[in-house]
Length: 132
Image 1 (cartoon, one colour):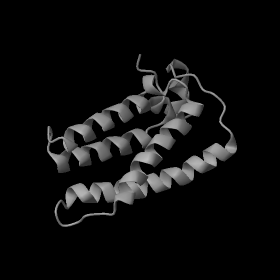
Image 2 (tube, helix red, strand yellow):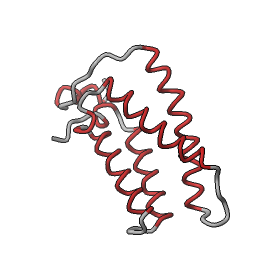
Image 3 (tube, one colour):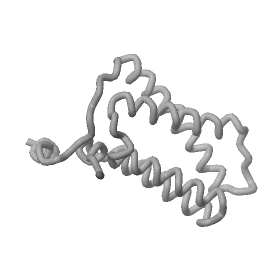
Image 4 (tube, helix red, strand yellow):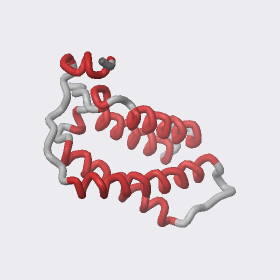
């Protein structure tokens, strides 16, 4: 038995609702679009001044991100009390701080992407664990 299954009984996870299969399928496509937009967004910060992407990528990353949070909320009703929801809030705060020059842009955006990768690939019992 895996470590995750052994400790699943000890983990307090948020309420789980039903989500139609078509919403799951749609969220997979939207997640792929979000990753494309996010990659271009990251490139913009890493190669500041040498690369200026079309604004459609900025809209793509924010609209797809909003839709992803909505589709996750359909399944996990307490998402902002879970690790994944708190990570989303922290990512938005970090991106805002970088945009307004409170933190160094390139490093903060890379840190945000690192946080996103860690949280999205963490096991379910960690990702959806209730924080409070």
